[in-house]
Image (cartoon, rainbow, N blue to C red; front, side):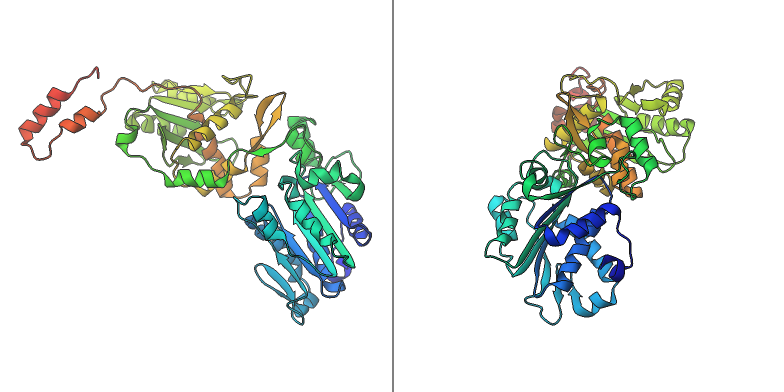
Length: 472
């Protein structure tokens, strides 16, 4: 069907999944990143709709947004390539149905709220019954345990044919995908998709050069290499650094100058490494962070000059420059020439809490996330939101380890996302070291209380002069 209807040739592993489908009630695709697993789910969905009488199919993913952008978009892609599908089925935002039998012949998208408990998830997925019935489950590597028992309900009631097909990256040591590959392996047809350059059955959709580069750079035992290149479970779970709701809450908060007047003013500087990267100058004072300055195609003299100007105008107490790999060395040298004292930060260096964090980069990111959760306020930025929420971590040798930046960048494509990663790096650098405010006069609570807007000009000056204490 795929060859004749969609005019495309399946990869070797895709052909294995398609041929296994008629005789396998449960199929689990444990995949590396980007091999075309969602296309297989879409092909099977359309096959079932075309070849079974009055079928009922449920489709879901880890979130409503993910379902819309991945599986539902893939179903739409193949729908629009086929005159037959367009003539027989109606395609909407959450439902595909046969025009002749709209109530009994359909594929429905199902989702649940982000904060749903097990009961709410069960209610959202329950009620899928027919003689020919199937579940398509995308991104199951991050599913909660409660989903699969509900989906298994399609096997009750003696249907003529029932299938569950799931696909995901093996990021979590638990959940439906992990269970299918381990303790329930005897009832699942498990297909492992790898981008391992040494495997003759590897997916051709991930280039050998990219795979070899990742292996060489991070090692074969790196957790993200295991997941994204080899399609294998890591030694411990891979988790998201922070959720979107927490970052969006930080976008809505704002503090007045009075609220943060006693806090140090800190600059974080991320220096561009590649042509599509931007150098980012980030300002933070206490719980308030400000919109960063993003600079493209500037040399070290121009970049250091801009930093020095902001440093003087804003009255910064400290400035941290990314010195990893030597990219920021020129900026640091130029700032020193301008009479400044920047602090170079080595991301691969040792953390203060070296028993907890694998390196300095991991420690800074976790300190920044803790700041957000304690009430930090951020200037709204879609790129920063993507960078923070798509960054993941795992545990290596009993210490927390952050995902490499290059892997995050490969996952979140686009200029905004790329700029967001630069913003994120400059933001977290403001937590590189503890900073004390310099001893300089700033308005205090007492001084504000002494101010009387209705007093005579001379009286105001006298009140201010008398109340000011440089040692307060």
